[in-house]
Image (cartoon, rainbow, N blue to C red; front, side, top):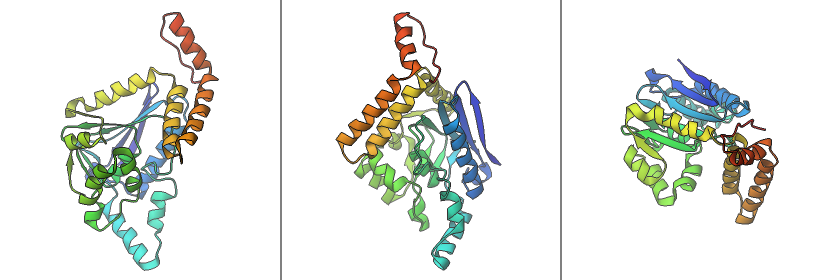
Length: 264
């Protein structure tokens, strides 16, 4: 099957459709997903993305047939051309990518291994009550190298991250909510509508303001100290205040009407 890309009203829906493998990703599907991330990033008319999978799987991770091939190549030569197909383009998990547009994950079932790494690259996460999360790589003798060991401790704190990373067991949606890497848990039938509700709320805001808020938060989080983070915040603020949308927002408030954003 494929990874689908659809856009309507500034909202992009990316759907992993490979249910015969529980939406596990091989190198070819990783390349499709990377291509979609680039399209979303570079399209000024695309303001928010939702990522999900078909049926009862968000993403079961990397295709184990190829993971085994990667391990074999590393053991024999110390390198892997198969792994390069996952990583040379930035990978499906947005590792080392800086997309400043909001990305919402709608987790509808199994979210494991590479699925967890993909989740770590998103900003808002909504899960169905029957969703299951797991960093399964250690149980397969593998390593979660798509961003999870770097991002998860920063996103949810050390003890919670170690529970997820070291135990490597299944975590329920409710426990994921308690640990803080899921924003909301809903009934399965309400999942996509709730994701679109969040996306529509975001599109009510000026797109360049939203993107610079995320940029400031993301780069500030990566900064070496708070002073550097303040400098990043100042630069993002100046960029927003110089836009036509900043003037439109103030004008619309005074005229008691909804703003019309141009993304300029």
